[in-house]
Image (tube, rainbow, N blue to C red; front, side, top):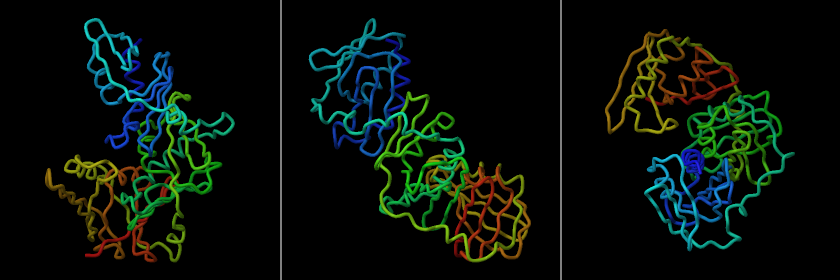
Length: 348
């Protein structure tokens, strides 16, 4: 069979393979002829192959991927011999031990795929809203619902202890009161532009990609999501500040010292002064970047300090060129393109 095609398909589901072997099954790729499934207990990913592999068993994921990636010939042979998966090319044969798994515990029995009439369109605007709101999800796993994006009606919400994101999506339909795991969103973002359908069946949220070739699913996050809409009420916005065209380039330079951080974890301090913005980012491994950008600030925002993800702010600046002071929450607010993002000001 085509080695590269198989390798590319397996690469799609490798994020579902557990990093640690606490549960052996979660470190495996579960083959079912023309498809394979991987799950780490939180993320469930299924891929359909272009041809039947003839393999119907669980195979250690990382070793198989490493072997396929190391080979150079265009075609290989997969064969199960005496409880081992044999991978052969012209001069190489690898035999992988496979775990014995009870049929009832096979991956295809854990999550049933939705029926055709259960799927709804996942618009590009919906996936974009999930991606942008993902920046405000909490990384503290003890906070339950705050570690995901909550979707209710035509609005997506996310928040942690110092920021709130709200994104309106006119095209959104049929997604009422569910919280989607940040882990799932991180995986969807890798395939943005190819997520076509979604549905919620029971406690599971499903996404269909590449015309059904790839399926990504995860349990919805349980627990009540805070009523964050109230935080956008209470008083008018004051002291609107135009942000300069030079700011996006300065924010990207801040990322130089943050390259060892995940994109969603990058953070830059911004200090607002009367005639400038002072940007500072640092990391223990690389050092610090400090940059001053000329800008005129209203009195309400002079001496304001905020912490924000520089990549996220670059995206915000593609939709709006300003920010305002929001006295009801002692915060600044950005509005544009359906997104409203509120950031609590830091104390000196």
